[in-house]
Image (cartoon, rainbow, N blue to C red; front, side, top):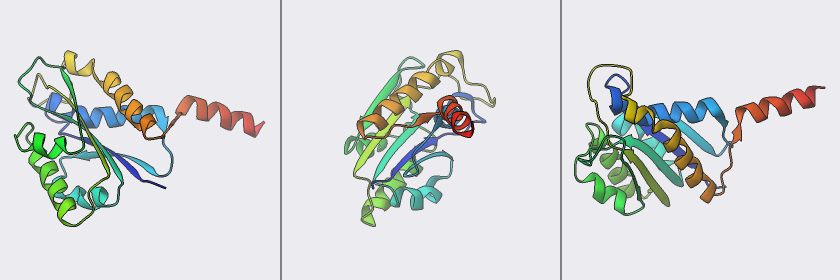
Length: 171
């Protein structure tokens, strides 16, 4: 069974910089994932995330990326394009992600499949709130993550559906 890691990166103390974490929080709030799929708030842990990346076959990262476009613009980068894209510093902590990917490759534990979903931040300042254009993208990004997971054969269960089934079985 292939393992999958959905990793939300960012600093929630810096407004839109925390969008990756917010997307992961939304996914965890709404869905129960199969045992072989881990959905994780990676925050700004950098190289501390290496053991998680080494232990996964498929890695899907959600992060704020500075593409110098309109706030809320989305980008999907896959497989070999991701390390190349990260060679241009696009987020305060993405050098950590590039370092993680480089270390994983050197150790022979690079994920078979790699996807980076990014959103152009608008506000990077000390606040816990996402700016309106970025907040509007959280559910859209969550849906895009779910679509990629579905392409990999991963179908999480909505928490509401799971609770209803549990209640039915208890009767």
